Image 1: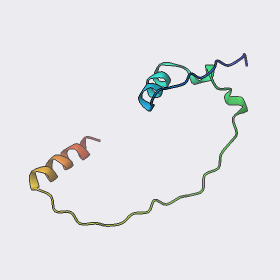
Image 2 (image 1 turned 135 degrees about the vertical axis):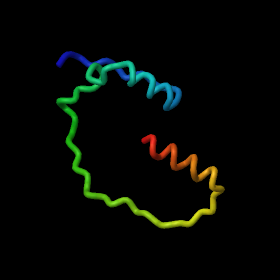
Image 3 (image 1 turned 45 degrees about the vertical axis):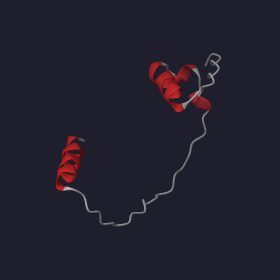
Image 4 (image 1 turned 90 degrees about the vertical axis):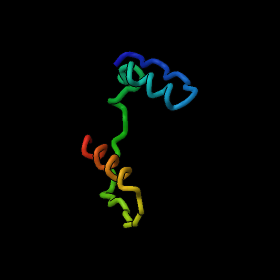
Length: 68
């Protein structure tokens, strides 16, 4: 692969996100040299909680959840 470009310094995460949305990472990273990573089967820890919410808020939450 040809020489990769230098990754610029970013002021914040939003600037970095905008950069990577509009640039091809293969111009900046040699993915052929990237190390493989093995991740263990992690189970997310969950805990049940009870919340009292106004019905109108709960309805809006359900509507938004169903959109996804």
